[in-house]
Every structure is written in structure tokens, then in C-alpha cells.
Image (cartoon, rainbow, N blue to C red; front, side):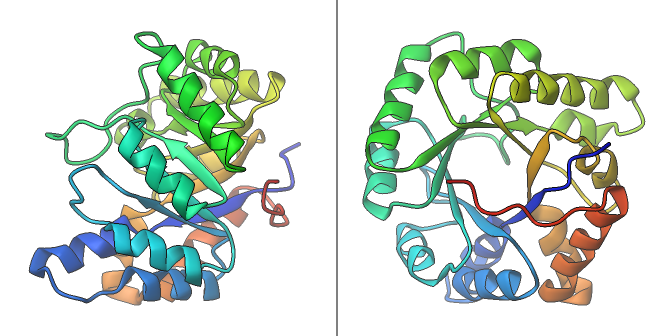
Length: 250
């Protein structure tokens, strides 16, 4: 039987991308966060990139004040970003890889090259009272390495699945990684490229307790509005499995 609890966090980076196209003040990511929460979002995710291409430092400070649910801040594992996170004190930080030339995050953290650096970042964040997650490729090996590093959660990169949802192997790797991670005591999250069309099989994976979705919801909002787009996604998740919303993680 599927697990009964799963959360939907909305990534509002793409609202900031629209704003930065004109370097103006609208649309406002803070107002987007309020709308998403009012529509039933269980949390808000924002990625502060080193090049500040969308979310800005002032957005992070503002979001910390207005979010009433749960704030998940994504950032690179570098000293500057860690210092910002520790000052802002979101409930959760998700460490992600960052390559300046990429349009979006196209893969998980490299846990082989320099695990000590990631482990040190996790320890710094934990000492500040911040829960930690690692954005990783959906493989058993990556999950096992994450557990060794000592994070609280992993977010499985669903990009390969979202590009080819009909290929059963892509969904199988997510399911196997989720099962292994849960068995190791990790909280399992997932995200990247998920949409109304492909979310159901991922949502139905019983070990996954949280989905992070942004681009498809903001894109859909162009036609039906942000409140309706968030509600529509929650309905699609419910169609995959009946669930009560999980309480925020400690």
C-alpha cells in the first residue's frame, strides 16, 4: 500500500526569472509564495544561485519573513552560500550542484570527488539548527553515499524520468533509490521536470514524502492562474495516492 503522507513544495524561482527579465519589481516572488500557500502548498522552495540569475539575497530575507509553512532554500555547497543560509535560518537547506553555463540543474551532487566538503557543510548547517538535504541522482550508490555523509534527507533528481516517462527503467531507478534511502533512515524527496502529465507514478512511490515542483506550475499559471495551478497539481498527486499532508519535518 502507498504511504499516506506526502507534501508539495512549490519552487518559485521561475517567478523571479520573469521579474529579472526586466530587472523590475514584478512579478514578486514573495507574493507568489503567499498565493501558493493559500492554494495549499505545504512549503516554498527557492534556489539562490551564485550568479543571482533569478532569486536575490533580498528575496531570501523577505521569504524568511512571509512564509508561514516551510522554507526550503536550495544553494551551492560553497562558503558564501552557506553563510547566507545560516544567517537566514530556513527550516531546510538543500545542497545542489551548480554550473554557471547550465540553464537549470542538470544532475545531482558529485558525492565521490569531495565528500568531506559536503559533510562539513552538512555539519555546519546542523550546528545552526537547519535540516539538510542533498540533491542527488536517483541511484542506490548516491543514496548510500548521502547516508554516509550524514544528511537528513535526499532529493532524487527526476530529470531523466521526466524527459522519458514511458521508459520503465527511469521510474524503476527512482523507486529503487527511494526504497534504499528510506531503509537507511533518510527522508526521501523528489523533483525536477515534474508536471501534471508525469507526476503520478513518482507521487505513487510510497517512500517519497515530498515533491518539489516549480517550472510546470508557473508555466501552467500563465493560462489558469497560480492558485489554480497549485491546486491542480495537488489534485494530480491525490489521483496517484490518497494521502493526508505530512506535518513539516522536525
